[in-house]
Length: 226
Image (cartoon, rainbow, N blue to C red):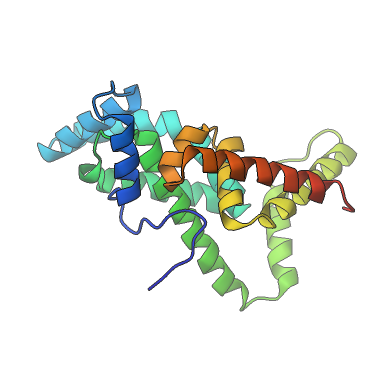
């Protein structure tokens, strides 16, 4: 079944062909990053059946990527609770499929692809669920969760900040699929254009074009009426 996504398909964590090709172009012989080396070590522990030690070592990867992963998931899902669930699901999927990891590509790239595709699946599932609810009920539930974080000292400032975030979120949603993915990975995922190129299979120069066009379109959208 064809599934149009703003990020490439990855129904299993096995790396797609375009990522393998991009990794090959970078050169497999390059020194591994600390996270990639740790992932290789964990893979070896799992293969030897040392699961307790593997889980203990994997906690280091969780700590290193939790904050960034939460930012990415929230930008896709716009719901703190669901974003947390998506991040935890991604970590569980990574650990359970760590045997599929190969050091030819950065661990961060592999993990981020799994996370993004999980978020996209959740968005589609949410869209199906929302058809069964009254719109006001959904909005009120989201507002209640947002307020659960605790009120700041300045209610007016909080309101203005929330309105600005809402305008930006609406504008980002109006970007086309690839522009949205590139913009979110660069600005919320702290990814370089080269890293985005590996994740998406796009040429690095194409990534930069999408990023430029996304920023230009957002400036136009945000310069209009709220």
